Image 1 (cartoon, rainbow, N blue to C red):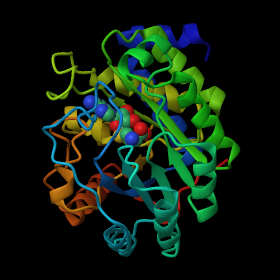
Image 2: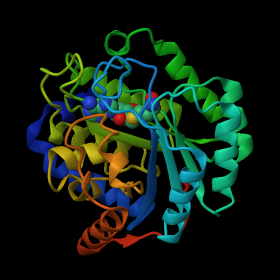
Image 3: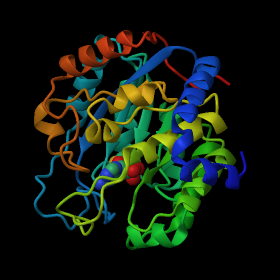
Length: 327
Ligand code: SAH
């Protein structure tokens, strides 16, 4: 699709059902009916950055900060592996405590568990990404958040838009499976820029795309902003499936947070991945990038069983492989 076609669909409410059905059909044809589960470990909520939308931004003094150290990360990873997860996702704020050596030790130990490993720990240098890759990391998630440069610069004080893009191309060059994505509904975000986001995903040839509605957090400068629209986020996701038919697309927790059936609706509109949390309750509530996160009161066992039942109830199956992109 060209930019104008994407804009037309994003601005037209009457075509929504057809769009979701078409995305579901393409998902079925290209990546099948299997849903990949990834076990998510949010291992540190300490962050040096100031992203205006995020509850973990460094100026927020009201959040109780935590760091999970290596041995405990490995414990959660083993537990996830034993529960049947084939991929572990390590996510955190940009926390410099985990230097290259510490990260590489964690990566090497997790890779001994016979799982695929995804990192989502922010902007690093080429050499750091290279070291993680050599230590065994397979995939990396780094959302561009928005391709509208002015909006990007407004949302991310003291950050460089060029560097975020450079990181994504560095990761590609190093042979990672690369995930990116955007927020939908940021203040002053235009429909045109959402179309540009999808075109950017395609230019990068991203292997995974995560899309979520923006949810205002009361301890951020955007506390009074309007929440992103569930259906608009779903449309961006469905259009992403149609334009990049063979990639992996998660039904995001942010979608579940603003719509009680959000993940299942997403799985029926182009998504084929779910990322349940595998850490204990104590940490989940503190990893508050946005408020009232879905599943925040569930144990890892509950999260897994609940989503398994829901996936089966819509006629889909749980994948038993690592869930790389099927090119
Ligand atoms: N520090 C890592 C991980 C960020 S958390 C990194 O920079 O990649 C993962 C994602 O949560 C972010 O990429 C962002 O898109 C999303 N997020 C953060 N705050 C949010 C909010 N208020 N509403 C919805 N999603 C949010």
